Structures are given as structure tokens and as C-alpha cells.
Image 1 (cartoon, rainbow, N blue to C red):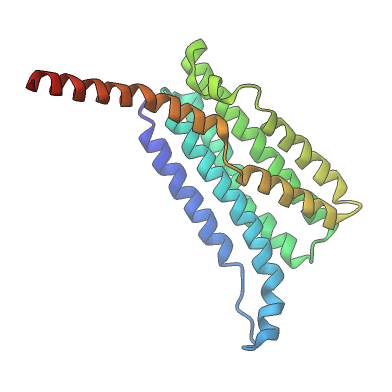
Image 2 (image 1 turned 90 degrees about the horizontal axis):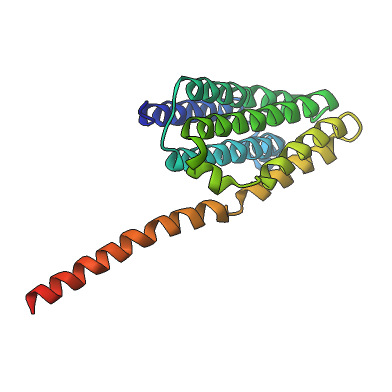
Length: 212
């Protein structure tokens, strides 16, 4: 199957999720600095969720760049991922309006956990389609970063019942970990670009030698 429609649909859904999420932030009635301070927790909570959606969008983009084949199973796995991402605006709004209470903080972590699990399912589905020669499998490797995130979300969800603020800090820490450049993907694209550069240099040298 052609993967361009999958990419376009996913990009559109994630864009809509971000747009819906920002609508939940209500402008303050106070036009002074105090009004801005009142909505600041809402803005910071939105920022955390925005970072997560941005991270998923970028990783999803890179994954599909590397992928060479998809099928119906991959399409369903992708919808599964989008389902959990679509719940982020709800959990973000609940987290904010509850003033970071225990249950909303835990549910926020649960949604992040299942979003991460669904992303791994999508990865595995693509790898199964491509077989033993899968480039995605070679790039991901053991995926220690992904496993660490799963554990952190689970710990954060449990911690939220006792210390919601610490759970939020765990979610933020995981987001910052994923904001760091993924050297595996960079290395893959750099190695893939080397042969094309060498071919270009060969063509130039052949052209120069023919001119002489």
C-alpha cells in the first residue's frame, strides 16, 4: 500500500487534536497581569501536552520515512495510536480543571502509557510487513529509550495517587528525554546519503574526464 495517505491523514488528525486542545484555554476576564497569572497553569499544562503531541508527530514522521511497506494491519495500528493521542485534550483539560488532582494525574499517565504502547505496536507492525530486511528494525535496535518511557509512565501513573506533583514532573522529564535528537535516525539518514554523494562525485569526475 502507498504510505502517503497514511502520513497525510495522521498529520491532519494530530493538527486537529492540537487545535481542539488549545480551545480549552479560556481567556481571563482580568486584562492585567493577575489575569495572565490565573491562566498560566492552563498554558503550562497545554505546553506539556503540546510537546508530547509534537514528539509523536516527529517520531511518526521519521518512522514512516524509513518504512518501505505498509498493509491493512499497519493502518489499524496507526488508528490505534491516533485514538490514544485524541484522548490527550480530554485528559489535559481534566488535569487542569481539577487543579492536578490524583485521579486526573493518574489517568493522564495512563493515556501516555497506552499511546506509547500503541506506537510500539505500530513499529512492530511495520517491521513484520518488511520482514528480516527491515530498515526500521535496524534503526530502532533494542529501543531502550522506548522501554524506559513505558516504565516511567507506569511509575508516574501509580505515583499520582500519592504525589500528583511528582507524577507531573515524571511526565515532563520523559518529554524532555524525547526532545533530544535521536542519533539512531540521524545516523541512518547520514549513512543513506553517503552512497548518493559518492555517486554524484563519480558522475562529476567522469564528466570532467570526458571533457579532457
